[in-house]
Length: 193
Image (cartoon, rainbow, N blue to C red):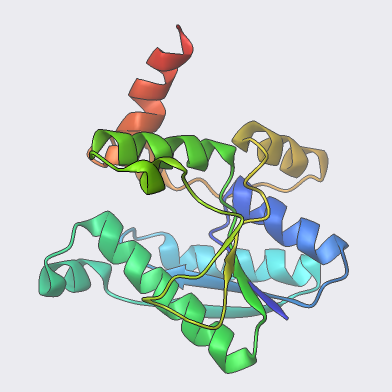
């Protein structure tokens, strides 16, 4: 099977339903970061999406704030580490051929800009790949990004056409996080040129 990391947002719902439509064996996996009070309720909503797509469902949780404090990480880095640890552990457990995530072209733009602003070399400027291995998580199971060539507005349109109501993570509006500042301030400014 493929293990699909699902947050409930438009990108991950689009991923889930596209993979399901291809008649691939898919297991939807949700990780509750315990950063928002509503996240526990979201797990049951995502379980319903998985059932609607005809997929099995796994859920995990972790205390991301504690992980950040213990390892001296920012919240975003700790959340990523906890989420990918869960996804790859579950992928190993179920014998998945890959972990699929819903990164889009918008995420690619944001990633490249983040790398540029942090002073990346050429490797960082190439951005994310459709298929890669994350050595810190698994040497055998790849991470795949099937939606990397489409835009976030296209995933939203896909969901709207199918009557899917994606979850909205209010932390995506929080400009304390670098990626959100890029998304809501820098990229719109760059688009005006």
